[in-house]
Image 1 (spheres, rainbow, N blue to C red):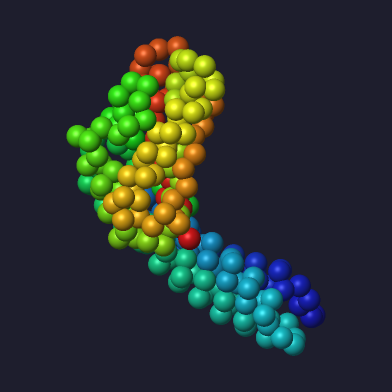
Image 2: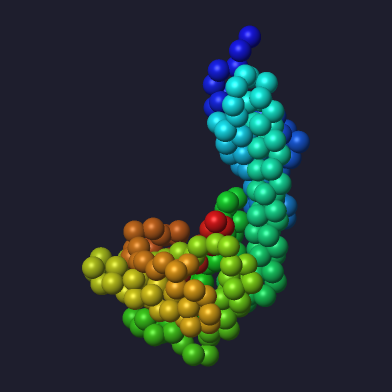
Length: 220
């Protein structure tokens, strides 16, 4: 029987290799989660790419698909390992009020705005820049990523005011990272205002959680 579809061949080879690297457990608690998931993604992508470039009969396509899946798995695993290392180092270096969340294929560094700004201000407090310095140093050490700086507010005040404040605060944090040596081409900044709360705005504690700046690190 002839194998006609490069997509089917590639997916088959890639998914076969994922059985060798997949495991049980949550990426939120597994220090090797990004390495394993990178290998899985690389295997599938490499398998498809290898099959598409294969010429001639089905055997040639299958051989190229398997080779591409192996190469993709190795490359993806290396990228995931670097991400795991970066996550671990950030957790060990940042202050206790700053959280690092592993989302599987990217990292989120959550900085409460009350640690960085005075009320209604977008000017960074000079005495509280050490955590941003740590993040910038990490981004410079692991340069193969893009960075999104996203500002969020609680719902006190008008929607328009909160949108503007969140944008200005995100821009301030982004400018600080760039000032610490992170290339501006890697950094984007935007505000979400009050539109993405992570807690209820009905209590002071919830409002404090919603006032935050998130730094999202996405490996290339």
